[in-house]
Image (cartoon, rainbow, N blue to C red; front, side):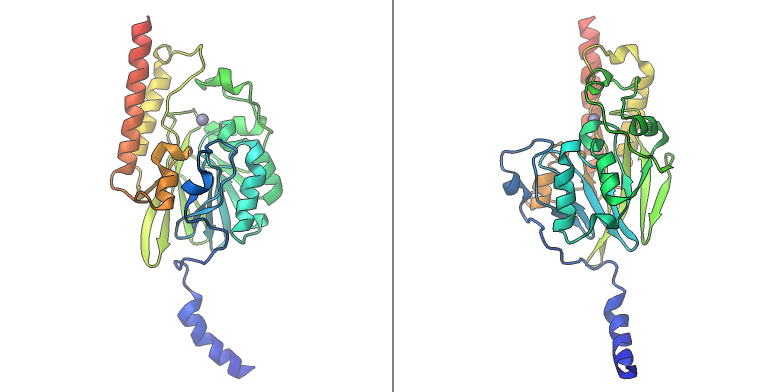
Length: 298
Ligand SMILES: [Zn+2]
């Protein structure tokens, strides 16, 4: 027994403490673009794909869901719509994890296509839901925010109420084992919009992943941004936040918003300089275009 212990200790010293080593996971596709083919629906199942280090894409062909392994359990960011829940749970299992290993649930924005499955995933995992105060009421009630420019659409898509376990303010940080998740409020797309950044290490190379929220300023038919100068100012402030994110690898809630599936498949580089700056600039352009269109219609 002692001999075994003496043999084990040096081995542990050599191989045991390697938090940045890339684990070998089953079920990962090398080509998520081919796996999805022409399917890009919010609930179209996709196999899991490796992002970097211990971060994986476990969403659908049309909606991003991110799983991060830490030394103290898993963190899931977004869930996709309610009917994608079985696919997301199946992807977590396909990677060799048990959904009960998910300890925290985080989110980008309070719309049914990204967090409609939150209540069901919370039930399946038992994880704690951490949200920005501005998104809490929507998650708790399942009903949209009256201030949301898309209220008229969203009210037709109520969500199952979820339990909010903890609120974290803008600039807050959630430490889960060896990984720190920083929260950046960026109320461009919705009042409760948030981006998350964390450090990811792979074979000794460390990068910052930025899961930056949607940058589109769209609305229901009755809403006019020109009649809501505060909303326009909040949207602009949110774009400035995204522009300034630490951002070696950009992830977006709609994978098409940043060629994410192509980048996961390796047909485009995963990491590009100025990715968040370019992403924010496209949002600014869209907002300017929307304001100009409204002004011309007057
Ligand atoms: Zn949305």
